[in-house]
Amino acid sequence: MSPIPPSTSETITLGGGCFWCVEAVFERVRGVLGVESGYANGQARQPSYEQVCSGDTGCVEVVRVRFDPAQITLREVLEIFFAVHDPTTPNRQGNDVGTQYRSGIYFHSPEQERVVREVVAEVDAATGGRVVTEVELERHYWRAEDYHQHYFANHPGQGYCAFVVAPKVEKFRKTFASRVREG
Figure 1 (tube, rainbow, N blue to C red):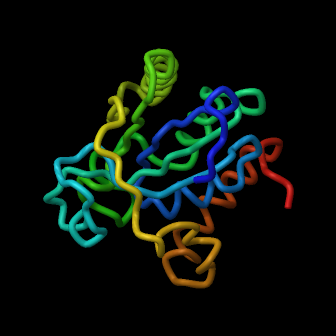
Figure 2 (cartoon, rainbow, N blue to C red; figure 1 turned 30 degrees about the horizontal axis):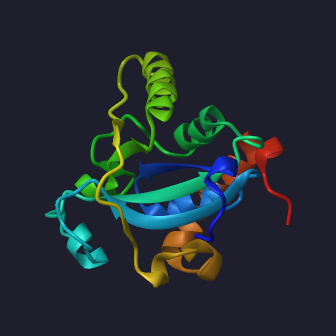
């Protein structure tokens, strides 16, 4: 992620299943300045993708989303996040199963925590109390390997991308047309 002065950007870390899906959506959101795939909130230090996939590290696949709060609010970022993943299935998104695919929001400040907990409570009420999204301070973040960065943009024809990622991107485009970045 390129350096942006802290006063003009904010970062939130999101786990919503495979990071390729979440990354692909947020790379298209107006007001998002950068997206980086990584691993967070586990015990392993600098884990590899293979280690995380084993389910033994406690890490979750995440994306760090850096955004301009003058263009998009944290609440709006979270509304998009909840629209493109299922926050009611523990340790799974579709066919991706394991603790590394859990739903999670990892905040970076007390103010973010307040907003996150508000939005999660609203989504929980709307789903009849079924939300399992983990809400914690981000800790032990590690950037994923280079080949995971911008995966959908670099491999749109790959099977998983075509059949899993692309429909999530299309859902975002239809549901949040006014938030789609031009170009």
